[in-house]
Length: 499
Image 1 (cartoon, rainbow, N blue to C red):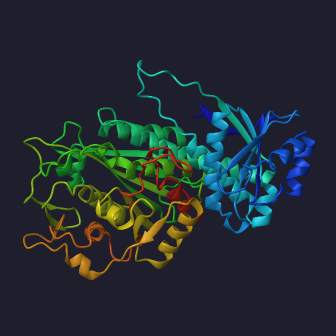
Image 2 (cartoon, rainbow, N blue to C red; image 1 turned 180 degrees about the vertical axis):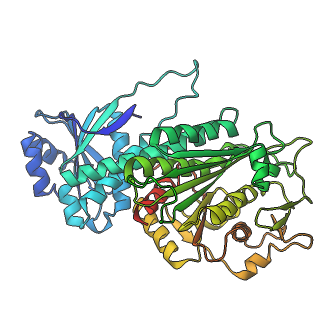
Image 3 (cartoon, rainbow, N blue to C red; image 1 turned 90 degrees about the vertical axis):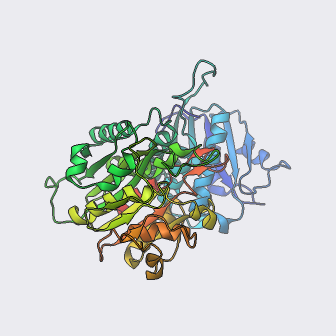
């Protein structure tokens, strides 16, 4: 795709406009095209047989005026032009601009957006997100056997100030999500536990965040027993990382407002441990860190784009689940800093063990306004929801409403799954307090959330997001190419900004 996408530019090589199904270009669009000497060519193109106006279709016109081409996007029926549709349009338009090797573009959707009743700033943000997301590239691991693609830098602007402002916000949110995607794509021989901690430290320096790391004896001192046990078989040692964003003007980190705490599962690789994954079950396990990657992406967007007025704390539980004579075993019993004991029944249910440390710390030390954890936690959530929704577990009505509102704004869909005391009972152990995995596969994704609930202080607003089905795209479609999606980075940043 592009080397970069930014807002600005005086010249315009390409204009993007939209028309509804079965309708001509609206008067406002034609008026602006007239000023560019492109109205006649665009109108003629709309008369072609392939110019249906169906959603997702594109036709092009090549005027002899001040622009090289006009891309006319089909918008379908006006009632179906939603923010999600505008975001998808941004992604598809980015593909078209890339194919045209365009270096500058004017997005003129004012008439259709007004007809559909969409706020231009929010629509600009959605378009910018889509354009920025489709612009992601990760060429770092290409070698001499691959021809280096020729890429251009794209300057883009809107037809109105509010749309352009939204466009800039959307592109900024996409930068955060794309950071998460690049980290996800980074292979495990490079993205070790130390590497991930270093990336968090570099982000902190870049964005003005505070940084703290626990490893080695510091983990022992703070009794981060899940990380210690899960990570002890690997030469890449476990660690817990803490980042903090403080709004401008609040120099005191202990200011009265309670922070939003984001917790990310950051398993740099998951072999399954002694409960070894079979066949090709390990392929893709470099993405078991995607919860933590999303948290880092969210912190980038929070610090550089949205800048909320409340403190935000990020906790990354970083480990590699490996095999050696030091590996933790099924039948081991682990005691956590909150006093809960866990009987290990499956070393491949390790993510919840490392998340438990961060949840304990968040509730005990951070005095949180709310805690949101995000993790590629269970295969069961993929069976339940596929790749359409992330599983959401949240029993606090106010927090759930905020998560759902952020989800609606970013198009990262969540579906509430139930929590009940009977699910917690599924996790009871005959030896310790609880099991890390019940061999009974009933309510598999809920088991993971039920386990985590034992490490959240009663009364603390808490949301668990299981992203195992949505953290990677299986095909090129909409705003994404095959590969990581950075799911959750935009949602968490948006939630923090609106909390």
